Length: 285
Image 1 (spheres, helix red, strand yellow):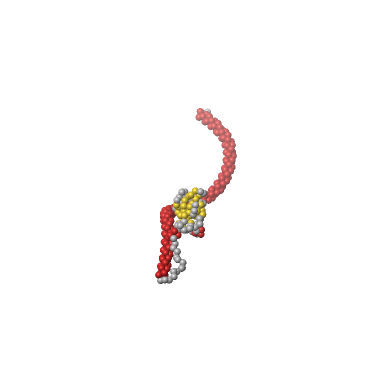
Image 2: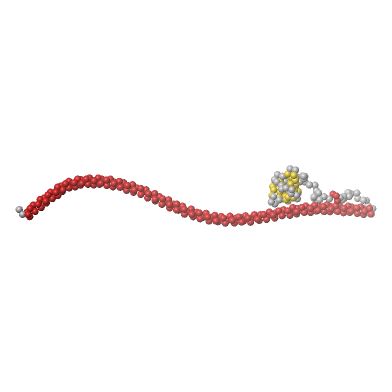
């Protein structure tokens, strides 16, 4: 047997052994791969079942999310509508605010104008009151002068009557003298009497109205005017003087300048203290 043949036999033997090893390895490996395949197939089945379950859960979640999205969209639309309404309300409020501000501005101007008008009227009223006080004082002075003139006029009238009586008496005496001279009888008629000068009475000395008593009903301290609770119906006349007392204390005098039927008003004189409503007034102490 040659060496080459031996080599081939050895190589064939080695190859056979190698081939047997491969076959044995293949068979062993085939069994392992089958088990792994079964295991993997079971895992895949479990994963498919889990995947299907997760898909179902995902679908449920998607449905819930879609429902939630619909709710949120509805709420969003409602909020948008509310926002639109609020924007309209804000716009209306802003417009009303501008209108009110304009009205306030106009009212402020009107009020300022009225204030200035009232201030002017107040100044005019103060001036009118001052003028009225002056006029009242002048009226009191004029009334006093008028009373004096009336008194003088009465005196003059009495003097004229006296002179007229004296003239008549002189005429009667002259007639008697003429009758005596002519040898006629002297008239025995009543001789006109002459009023004595002591009988001449002025309006100031004329009998006064019976003592009047009343109360102070109004007091205007600014214009120094006082109103008493008697008038022409009680015999009050312009120029009369009332004495104002409080208890036993003398307060002032009131010279009447204006008279109504049930009340009279006058200016203050001889002021010791200012009168108050309810003080006593009288034409005599």
